[in-house]
Length: 338
Image (tube, rainbow, N blue to C red; front, side, top):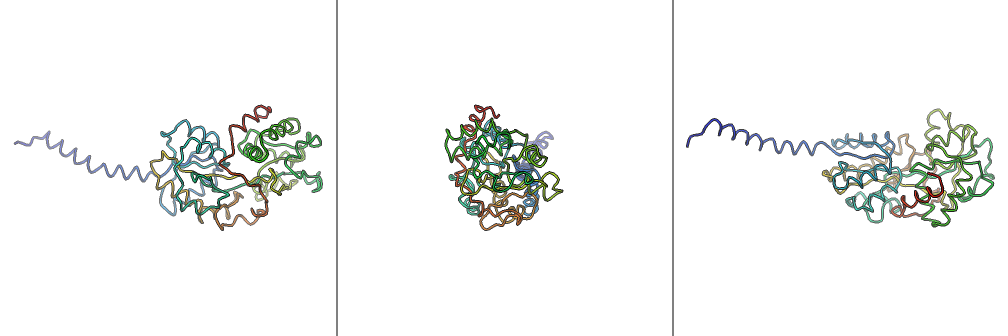
């Protein structure tokens, strides 16, 4: 049998292909993970940098909002290019989980976080937390003047005196907690009163600035906006103090920032490793030592020392997987808030 030049070329091509195949497979594995990130960009970047430095695994971050990504993941289904989904609040996690799009979180990762800060089914886990507060104008209000409950803001005496950012995922998570704790009728009535009583702002920081400028006496926001501004110049919070409702009140709700690995991820090992890292000592140290001023949630992990300890907040117990974003947006739309 003669071996022609064409046969030789074909043989060499085949050999080259066989040699390149494992190289391509290795390249695909080394491309790292894609994170759909609804957390604060600087915080997630710090997590990604720390994780990559320790493991060598590359992290590509795509930034957006909680419900934007939650709905996008549902639409993408098994074709989603994301490996990990991170949120600011838990309703987005609950939506993805309800559509059975998460892989179970590794047991070792779940073991790093208390039961309070993870989904009951083990499909996603808390990575950070934030407390609801009433930011108030300390030049106008004394402690005795402050609402004892979030529900008090529905009273006529608070008409025109407080504000919030109802269109944001932060506030909608708070309403989700109110719905879970007090039921639909009470939530509907409170939202109706809010429509009459409150001023509306685009974002928690804008609401806090309005309090600082004397435009309104108080605002329902998350705590870290005040701490973040104080750590800089304090110019947007110099006239503002924070009131913690405590007493298991809906206004003492602590919202969980969540993380989950998508079942469709082609990089399960790396994605699970990332989730384990950010809930472990390295990732929680970023919260303790950084300037995000969000609470650490890992077992035994300390938060930034400037924060009121989580154990002192007397937050109500809310099962995070039950927070219903769809019902909340329906009720808020019905009330004319969004």
